[in-house]
Length: 260
Ligand code: MN
Ligand code: MN
Ligand code: ZN
Image 1 (cartoon, rainbow, N blue to C red):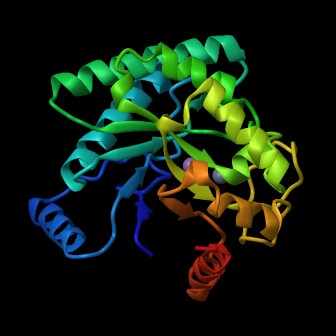
Image 2 (tube, rainbow, N blue to C red):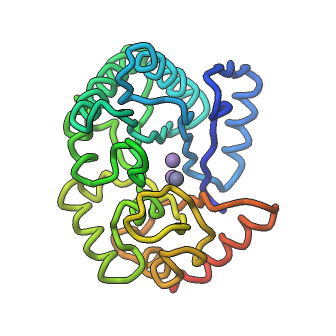
Image 3 (cartoon, helix red, strand yellow):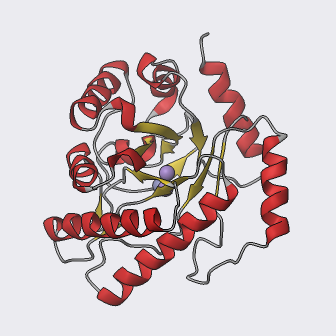
């Protein structure tokens, strides 16, 4: 592989990880001496920038800023990927406003701290009350953010498919990417999460599958990895991993689909 995604802490706890100077140094050194570039950091799953609870909301904002500090320390281009948030019953409009406000607090505070972190909003499957399952919603979040240079998009194929964007064939992919261009702009797209979907189109279920073994299917991935709009973008697998060989199998399969 020539790109990767990591967590910079345990993704399922609030506890913060303090990175030691020598850890940071050796990470950066090893990265420089590798052929892996760029690297993405995925935010902890607990962060919810749409939470109607003030306690959780500000806890999320603070945790996110800590994530940014670690990203800035570890990576030459500090990309930080986040699921926009879940409104947990307070309503979609409320949730979107809440996310925009959080992004602006975060952008301002991190600029004050001199951080250059790029925030990449990830499209979601729209399970439960998660927001960001349509390009229109993502567009509103992007437009609401005051520092647009530091905002981008991570496009997850499983999430998009589960949210109703048909990536299983050429025509569906064409329509999806054209809609992305219309609402958000392909220049905002920084990375693809390449995952098949365990559940059918529009199921709103976030369950990843091995490439070609889910409802998107091999033909969809063949079109995606060869699509001119996606040329040169990093593709990250978040496919299931039961044994050490699973990643290798998926990587080799994806590479075999690339036609030039
Ligand atoms: Mn994600
Ligand atoms: Mn993803
Ligand atoms: Zn997912």
